[in-house]
Length: 455
Image (cartoon, rainbow, N blue to C red; front, top):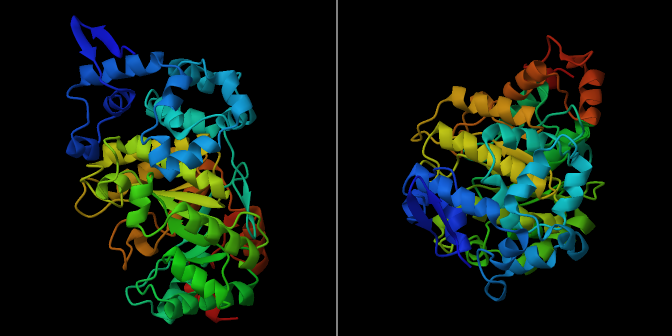
């Protein structure tokens, strides 16, 4: 197979499909660190030209890690709808891009075709998209999921209430939950990152957050983002849990660095479906991020974008209620500045939608990255326009436990106001019933955590 083109008098030849994919990628500091990025803008364009001419059968035949060597590859490939794949296997990647963006192609058509695609196909077409293409392509696709409420409905934007505390102080977290709820954050989940990953601590946080939900009859769900084995033990012991969580990576080796494999995830999924207190059927929550596999030296010379697409291919197996790309959390070693962070956020959201999963984004950055809060607000506007299902809500946009900058409790209401969006319907009805919203707008009581102490 010749992977060669001529551009401005220079000949560019690539040794493998994997190299074509890597060099077609937008500039990322992680790919540069790994030694697989294009050496110049001209080489990047040449790689994209070669990629656009490859058919989908060739992309499927050349996964990032061979089928026999990696269980993530097997999950993705075994999950392909073969009848649909036969319809599209002769399409070139460039043809797929044109079809996705065509005015005559709607979301239902895209969701059907996605069932015949592998993660590498999803990544390949993403590399041919501009930022505006990624917005338009993602906006067509609405992915709905049901836990105790329904995420992903048209015209809605949900928010995860993230009330982290550096010492897991229960009353401090409770106060933060109240502040977020008062501003309409928490309709996707009340999700706490624990500093103490022990069964006892996780159970206490689950019990407290469920107590808040029950006392105020809030149509939402809770989650404590501990390791999946800790959550499984807490759930087995009777702790009240709405969503089961785990971080994912794109290869078997990378997942092993997290202490997980497919068998364990299958077991967790089965346990969650039987014992979570949600109505379901979607009871899983995953987080991902470009650079995860590279940081574990488990990327097999593949670029960050391909590895991220494989995360979504794995997540699809478990019909998650929500998946969140924590886009700038790993740091500037992988996404150097706001340009790279914004691009990655749009890529991840598009790839999640194209993989058929309920997709959100933690529009965030670390303090040593070349980014500002304004940059993250820009990304929030772009993603909300693209139909992102949910964002993160953190007090003041500054996570006191994880020490990174994210979107605040105020950002989801601001985005809803700017773009004529609403909370999840069941949650909005609750906010109206307690007086925090009226006619779809926040009331004067909103933003005051003491509201929950006065009744």
